Amino acid sequence: MSTSATLQRTQQLVRNRSLAIKIKRKTLGYLTNALGSMAKFIDSESRKLDYTGYTPRPDDIFVVTFPRSGTTLVQMILYQIFTDGEMDFAHIGEWSPHFDVCVRGHGVEHLPWSQHFDVSARGRGIEHLPSPRILKSHLPYNMIPKGPCKYIYVVRNGKDVAVSFFQYAQTHLSFDGDFGQFFELFLNGRYRRPTWFEHVGQWWKNRRNLDVLFLTYEELKRNREEAIRKILAFCGKKVGPEKFARIVERSSFAFMKQYEDKLDTLTWRLIESKMKTGNFIRKGEVGGWKECLSSEQEAFFQRKFTKHLNNLNAELKGIIR
Image 1 (cartoon, rainbow, N blue to C red):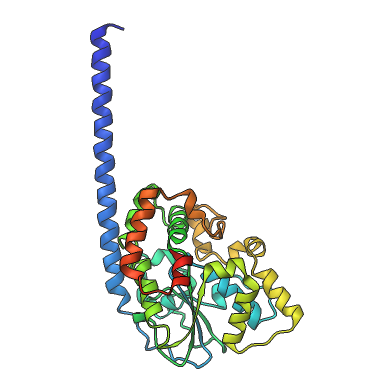
Image 2 (cartoon, helix red, strand yellow; image 1 turned 135 degrees about the vertical axis):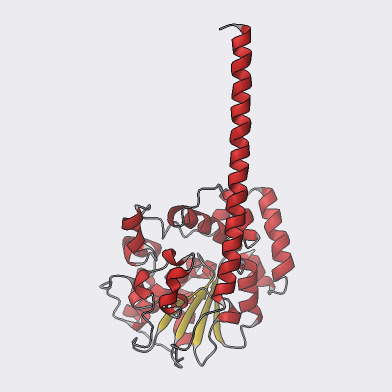
């Protein structure tokens, strides 16, 4: 190949690469703006929850978390406490429904994130459920219905939440960016509102205004037996040694992984959309963020943490920051 032809080819490759970079930047910019708009819409629409179909009962128990913080684990613990523990349901949402979806009624279909919810819960309501009702929720404190109920709030290290949420967004929400892109969206509330910082901060600040048991995901993983005892005491339940051992065993990662299809919020969508299975219960690790975050990303997170959650007690700070 002549020098002239080689030069022309090199120039064409440079132009192609430059064009590809521009397209990628424009695509990322569009994605960022779209997700930001979606987050704002979710925030405004979430304030339109209709509680008229919900009558609080004194023995209602809300399991509240920011997503990817241990919701399903606590649901399983409560299922084992309040039932015979047999895994004979089609999906745990039949026994412990997603409150945020149920109270929206049939109007949920028009919302942009509605395809990510269990369609069987839409408009079904929860008044038919026997007591005690175990209700899953991701609502911030200012939007949760206030009543003579019990609330179990679970908080997880925010960096582990970001990593887990990123994996979930890839396998369940068709996010095709890299972790750096997602992490920026996550921290700035462009992927979900309120942010993790705001969600945790609201619940911590108001934890004494309701009957709240404040747990960390880390204690559920490191000392599950003690965490289960706290939950039992909070719920006013006593169980014998045999049942207690079963609760511990059936809330283990290994046991829950066997029944993942009964626990995954999107089981019904996996077949329809040919999405990846086996990723809802991923690893459940504590400290997995260390393999993903750069020193710059960790520093960015810490600045956000100091700004929004500096009022937490020292012990909780040490666990979740």
